[in-house]
Image 1 (cartoon, rainbow, N blue to C red):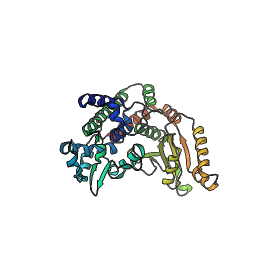
Image 2: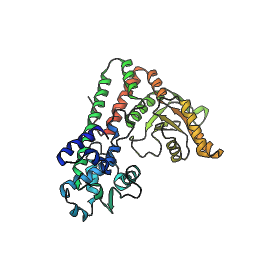
Image 3: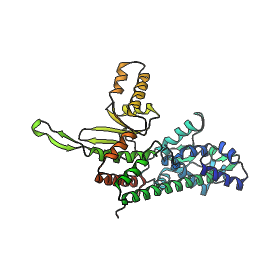
Image 4: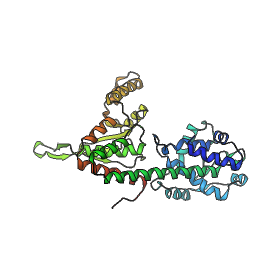
Length: 362
């Protein structure tokens, strides 16, 4: 249980005369929120899960004013209008670009997978274009826990905002620093195995973009038409985007990059399948040597293939390159002064974009 959730439950237990640990164990809703709120931890590997959390929060927001402590009336209720819920989600911190997947299916599937059995009730009850929460998860031993869940979500948002503002302040301080070596040291500290997923992806992109921009190739339809071009890396979208297995794309040679972690090799194969086995460069949040990762991947692919050459080759040929934290730090260290300053501007720009914050034009 997260410390801030325990603090809220302890505080509420004194008001309502219940045991905080018992309430937690008997509330699938609170346990689900706890699972989804890992992003506030300093060493988290979790994404922010705002879509799932805000889908629940939007329903609770309207519920508390109309049905709190009124179970019999709520049982007759058909649900809240989709548009009202979605507009509310979009107006929340970091919610401006959220999609509707969480309301429609994602929460229920994940809730059953992580908290209750497959035979358990859905958390979000869908009634055509109306949505509400199942009453079983709003009460624990006749105690309506909706306002407790709201307090937990609002505290989570507050902690995220504090964390985000701290990073923005650190970036602004970095940009103002005079020492290039000092800037490199600080950036290097931000990319490790405990980095938050979006931070790692943004900094990885910024390092790779500025690394490749110094590499030139020659393209043309004939020898006489060859033209000198520098490699350019493009970011496909936000870190939580459904990008089909492509986080970055390189021009003019057409390389795909996918940022991931080392702990789930099945996801690597899924990413390869998504792009029809087009070669992918994996940027991996690990300090393991790239050769060790390639060895583990090769072993996993061999096991997955059942020894069938056609399957083994299909995946092996689709792994273009492995880039780890080790390579990222080495390439960062090799950047010149101008590239380091541009790298910091890229990190600042894309992080503000992620958080829907205005650009600092000062």
